[in-house]
Length: 279
Image 1 (spheres, one colour):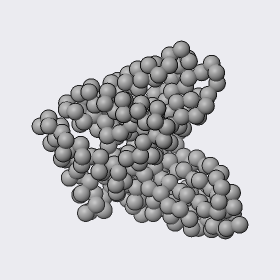
Image 2: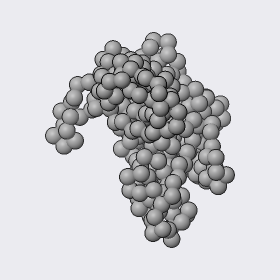
Image 3: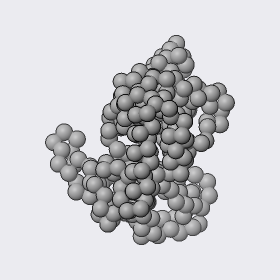
Image 4: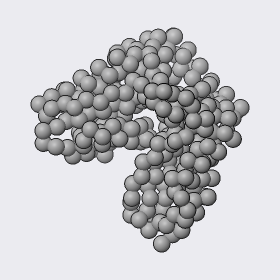
């Protein structure tokens, strides 16, 4: 049994909140640079160039990549041989408070979904846990801005809709989103499970590095097909046209009921942020 102090969890969550908002993951930055090199439409290339410049300014001046520093989504893979000494959830929430305060990050959480108000410290974080074999704890912080989150959708298709129905729903979602999610976008697609699980699959898909394809060749091919179709829409960077509407598509699946075909699309902007650590 491995002991991990709650105070250590609080400290690393603080650091991950700051790190994830100041530095884009290397795979996303690489995809953006490749898109810039390949783009031939002048306005699109200019927008991608500005995005690249923004990333460098954020690094050089230790400033957030985007003014929307997001809702703080925290994913914890907890080894079954780990013993957390102290209050696990409080440690995460306190870490978020410290990260968003010390990092001078915008606090974006409404205290009530209808009556609004602001919690003032970007809590609560939205925590998902999974028990896994081993004696390590992996923590991932994913700040999710709402400009892209608002463009996400879920549908309960029927088995008869098949893969064509899935493709149509993804394309309808992207086209309806248009310029709103600050393209070029990253698209996470969840297929299967239940109403609640399919949304999680779509968000989980966004956590996969863009240079990693689905291990199932069938879904890897579907990811590539969707990416090509999305980039043929001509929406382009900032919605100004061009061939770079999407940097990557990731699909996550799980078994589902014989009568169901749930599909969720979680849209992310080109600032698809995440940072992880293993304790």
